[in-house]
Each structure stands twice: as C-alpha cells, then as structure tokens.
Image (cartoon, rainbow, N blue to C red; front, side, top):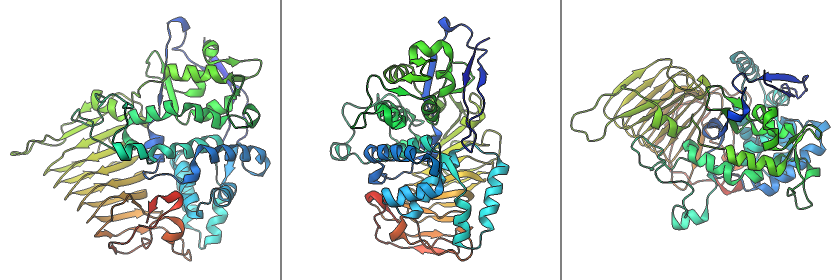
Length: 493
C-alpha cells in the first residue's frame, strides 16, 4: 500500500496531525508517470480582464511576501485577514479600499466552501445596516496568504505588452498556431482567460518567479533571488496547488500538486528531503517543468475531445453551423465546461445535468434567444449581437465582452462588461457591476441591476475606486462618459 505523510491546515490556519494519503493507483512507481497541468478556474474566474495595478509587479509582491511573514502574529501569515490586506493594499500598494476588497473577494470566491457556508455569509452581510457594521463582519474574513500572493501575481495574465501592441503577436509565437481555441480549428479568440495554452505558457514562463514568491525570506539573497541551495517548504508547494494539479498514468483520479509532490517515490526527482523537510529549489523547478503538460480539462480539450451537442439546428441560407461542445461526460464535476459558438436565429432552452456547475462560454451568437436555466459556475458572453440570454443562478461571475444589443437576465455574484454597446442588463447581484474600459466607450447600455447594498452605505465613487457607479438599483442609462483611470493606470469606470 502506497501513501504519503503530509500536514494540512484548516480555515483558521491551524495544523492538523500528519495524515496518510493513499494512492491505490500508484503501486508501481517504475511504470508510473506524473502528469501536471495548470488549473483553468483561477484564470477564468480569478484573473480580471484588465491590466493589473502597476504595484502587482514581482518587485512589490516580493516585498509583500517578506512583510507578511514578519507580521505573522498580527494576522498576516499563514492566514491573511482583511484588515491587514487593507493596510497593505491601501498603505503600501496605493490601492483604493474598494479595489482592495474587490481582489480579496474574488479570491475568496475561488475557495471551496459549502453552499450553507456561503449562504450564512450572505445573510450576515445583508443584515448589516451601516458601513461600520459591514466592515466589522469583513474583518473576520481571512484567506491563505501564499495562495493569495499567487492570485495577485496571475493578474499579470492581461498585462499589456508593448511589444505585442507594436508588432502584433510576439515572435517566436508562444504556442503553435495549430493549437486552436475555438470550434472552427482556427485560432481567433483573444480572450486569454479562456485560453488554456496561454495559462500553461504563463506558468511555465513565470515559474521561477512563482516559486521565489513562495520562498521564506531566509532562502533568498539580498536581491531577493533564489540560490542553488534554496529550500522550498511543503507549505509553499501546497500553496502552488492553487494553480497546479495532476494525475499519474493519466488515470481519472486527480490530485493536488502537494499530494503528488509529497509522495515518497517522487522524492528523488523533486528533491524532497526527510531531513530538512523541504524541497530542493532547483530540483523542484526542473521536475515541475518536466511534468507540466496541457490541461485535459481546458477549453482546447473540450473542443477537441468533448461531446458535440445537437442543441441548435442549422438554419437554411446560413453558411455557418452552430457548434456546441461539453466535457461533462469525461471530467470530474468541478471541471465541467460548455462552449457555444455561432448559434444563429435560434431559440434554445436547456436545463440539464450537463450545465450544472459548468463554466459556460457563449461566442459569436446572433439573433437568438438562449435560456440556460441550470445553476452555473460562471458565464462568459463574447462577440454576440441582437440576442437575449436568460441564465440560471451563476455562482461566480457573468462577463460580457465585445457584445452589441444583447439582453441579459440572471442572478450572479458579480457582473462585469467590457467593450459592449446597446446592451440591457436585468441582474440581481450583491456587488457593484464592473465596467472595464479598454479604450472603447460603452454606449447606450441600460441597467436594471438590483444590488443588495446595506442601507446607509455611501455610493461608490468611480474616480476613487475604479468601480462602476450609479448601479445600485433602478434603471440607469449610461451614455458616452470619459474613462476614468483606475489603480495602476488601467481604465475602469
């Protein structure tokens, strides 16, 4: 029987006794091969589709990594409480308070919790009658410090590259053009949040930074870099499980990175020592690079190997065929994904297990009525025109990009839009809608957003926080307003 001893921490950061994790499928190491891949959800849901604040650079995040460790007793490490993150974000990184809360809350939405726990928190927030009372409840929240550092780092996914802006796609290309990310086999989608090849390339290109960000300060040089003798703690590898998971021999059992890394037969390859109870930095980096491969649960795998759904019919006189694919039949429930493209002049209504808990992407649909009534994890609507979307409850976010004259009706935790015009939103959400400006204006959008804002809470000022304004209830027609620079120079209204 094969197993591994490792230490777990609960939500309060307390260490539990050493546990034995069994791997019944890992009996013969000589015949086993570890496959690791980058998780999709942190990028789909966690990475805001705007350039990050300038102080989310590696230089400042290294300083933050050292700072939180030196103030562990004040609520910074291993759990980072909201008051301390507010202090760091507002005092050190020069972020507005609401923008600091936005990142904190988005990361918290990625943490696995039961529906009962989330409902309890929602009821507590809704019962607050003042800003002071709401802040008092927020002060009780905490997140895993090391994972939160990684979350802040991956916001650079949408960082603007001057090289790319000037000459187009970088050369040499970071990935082979044959690796398609849509249903037509052509690489036309520029949405990095849904492109798993981009996720893999991002982690591979920045793996050194990611590992150095997790190192204890005494393992770094005076210039904050690793050395050949640097050691990576098991807690740091456990934090990296936020981004990486894997399996052995391509079995269906998926394990977090730290469970695989702490499995004894792999210690020689990844440099784990029972004496130091830590990993050799160079060996761990080499092992991770050697094992990283494409995600079997990403968008490209869904389109290549997923099940094609005959939910839409071909319309006479059209050359484009509607394409809908899902991976529900071949992936664990938490990795479900549905991609819809080129639905034209259709009325499509579905409520099925295929959709429950799935990340849904709707792409280039035109003159259609689409009803997806099952509970969903997230929804992205991109480059759609003259259509209506009625959605079941969305656990995390609804995001619209480059849409024209569409109507969206639904319930979600957060609504964000970019480059959309003439759209109507009838949304129930407990948070401020986000209007992410990317150089284009958002004209003629009509809001019917009802947000659960406590009575007595002051309206958010866009020029101070970078969040949407005047969306707390009722109907608001948004005209052609000038973009207001947010934190770090990104334009958020």
